[in-house]
Length: 479
Ligand code: IFM
Image 1 (spheres, rainbow, N blue to C red):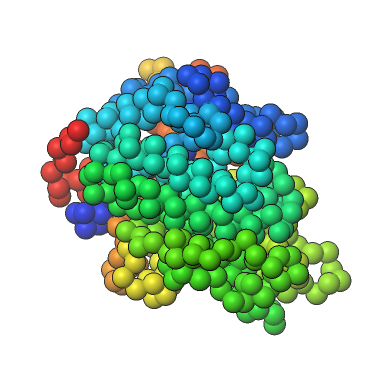
Image 2 (tube, rainbow, N blue to C red):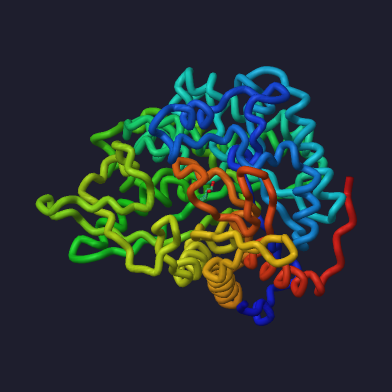
């Protein structure tokens, strides 16, 4: 197994792992949780692989203590999880459901008791279905409902959570949810997708305002974006990159970090929308100081301008469900990436991560960054040992994580203010439209028995964590 010995990060650097509520919790109908758009979507025939749903998932809701012990046994000192809005407000509005809050309070306390820093994401895609029935993220009111939800959660956990992330990958929520139809709620309307982009950005700003007003432990505030690292091909490659960069990256970074939408984005999408959904004052509210910018990175994307004659290639790494996640840019073609690939069909390119970090550092000097997701799905095989225990030998995942950590380390050495790395994911889980067919975990889940098996990648990570933490004492529990 490759050694972790040569990767040495600064003592304050957070090394952790990440999950999301709908992907692991299960207990979809318990303790007052209301339905989310992912319940509706996954229960709709043809939307997910094999008709899989998150009804049971990794049953984390019922196995909280054992999973916390598992994290501690791996030596984790930081854990990024998400809070399910429909557990807190089953219909997306109104008073808090105390049983929902209690679950996350126990999770946070359980982490702190084990010396693990809690990093909470408020929204990892599970919008209460009632809000979607009123327009979802195309309805401006959803942003204000989100702010109320943020306040409720902040009042309950705002004395203990160290880092608040408002949204995870709003690109996916907007463009896959409302443009391509690959994610819940499964709409295929480019104008709706762009409207959702703005309301998600607004929701972020409003939520940070609310959190700041109620938290008491001086936490950090962040948002996580899934950046598209783009390579242009052929004559029109540069123009193709510009267009997709505007839609995928700058539609978020510019309002969030600079307080405006890019002019070229507005022009590129003029035939789709007039952007009238941006109201006076919105951009000032979106443009909040961010303590951390979360970076999710898995692969690169190659684009070129379509010649209009040969069949248009659409290899953007997402399921084709009929619509386009690229409103206003039908002339851009997504070219198949050279291998090697993961089980998702995504190319493996650690240099892309280094390039991204250096680029963000150059464009937004002084903005601290954290890698909130990086990891890989591979075809894992559970093997039985003579003593009856189990193992998963996943050298490709070890290699993937090791090489991406090395790329992060190079960026750090080059001067990027990088504060941490979170492997996706702690455990195998519901991979959205791909259901349980893709395994990203460093811990294997047997979905029949819910048995957890530590993969070789987790053992490798444990060794890295052991060496890293040898530099610093364990933080005392602070609750
Ligand atoms: O599983 C997802 C996660 O929910 C968001 N980021 C990408 C991961 C892998 O597709």
